[in-house]
Structure formats: C-alpha cells, structure tokens
Image: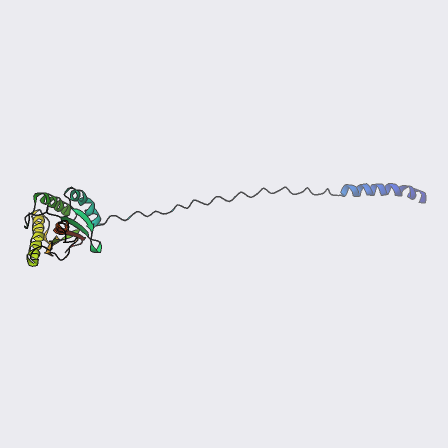
Length: 200
C-alpha cells in the first residue's frame, strides 16, 4: 500500500500543477489609446458696430442748397458766430452807387435765396448792411440800414415770411478789410445775410 502511494504521488503532483496552470488568468490587454480631443472652435470674428452718421442739420441742408446760386452770383459763404452761416454780398455789384436800389444781378440771387428759404423753413435771417468809412458816419449808418431793409423787403415780396427776417444797419463799425485802400473800402461796402437755425 505504501508503494502504491509512492507511485501515485508524482502523478498527482503533475495533475495538480496542470490544473493550477489552467486556472491562471491571462494578463489584461493594455487600454486602447483615447482619441485626442477635438480642437476648440475658432472664436467668431468681432464685427465692429459702425454708427450711421447723424443726419445733416437744417442749416447744413440750407447751405448745400444755396451754395450753387451763391457761387454763380459771387456771394461768399462764411462761418459766423454760434455756428451760423454768413452769405456775404460785397463790392459795388450789390447796389447802385450810394443808393439802396438793388442791382439786377443781386436781385437774381435774392430770388434763389427766397426759393431756398421756402424749402427750408427751419432757418431764419438777420440782414446787416455795412459801408466803408468815407463820408459822414451818420449818413453811412442810414445808408447801411436802408440797404439791409431793401434786401429784407425784396425777400418778403418774394414770399418769405416777415417773421423769419430782420434787418439792421451798422455803418462802418465792422470793417473786414482796411479802409486805407480803395480795394479795402470796396470789400467793406457789403451786405451780410446771417443764417441761423430757429425763428427770430
């Protein structure tokens, strides 16, 4: 009996070893690599907000409308005080010499001015007459006032509402050139039509 046990032991050992070997687990497979994350979407382009320019003011619209007629009749456009526009009719082509009688060419400009005023009701006028310093100061003041009033009367006659127009004479008190030369005196003999927004 002992001999049989001795012969069986090695076989038993082999069988047990085989069984244990069969029970051994295989090593786990390595994990699959994770895919790279998708790139972040590009930021949306920043589109600057462009504000529309403000609409032109009533005075700017008036200036654009009268500029052609002013250039044709030798009337200059100038910037005045407080944002006003000054239509300047100078020299001796505006009135007869030493008179408040309108010359025909200047009358043509006043016709265009009246039409433009009727199309742009939000502006008003102050007409100022000016002279050089030759002669009597009182007479110059009287003449300058008469010329300004003649322009106002013509505009009212052409359909401009009287409440939109005022006139005054300033004589030689506001020269824009030297009165020491003939050319300077010619420039100073003028009518300034000051255009501003709003009523009088």
